[in-house]
Length: 91
Image 1 (cartoon, rainbow, N blue to C red):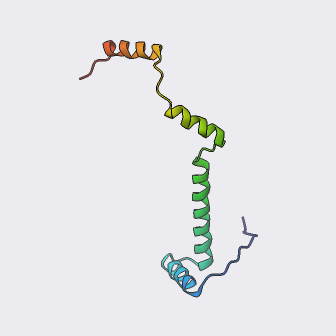
Image 2: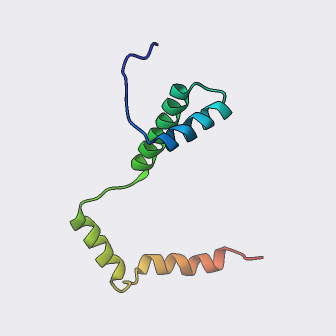
């Protein structure tokens, strides 16, 4: 597929020189070097954004309150743990 959209931006001369030097090291045209670098960063940012879990602040406050509350013993869990002591052998 042929690229049809353009992006244009201005950079300071010293930064342009660094980008051009890096493109030469990569043996790529400057435009290809800059385009691929921008695409890689955009992909990384979008992946990081997708990995985050977002919840309403009220939900988050309730979660923190629940974690701060004293533990309430659960009888079924206690019985299961006691049973596991007799079934699981440790070496």
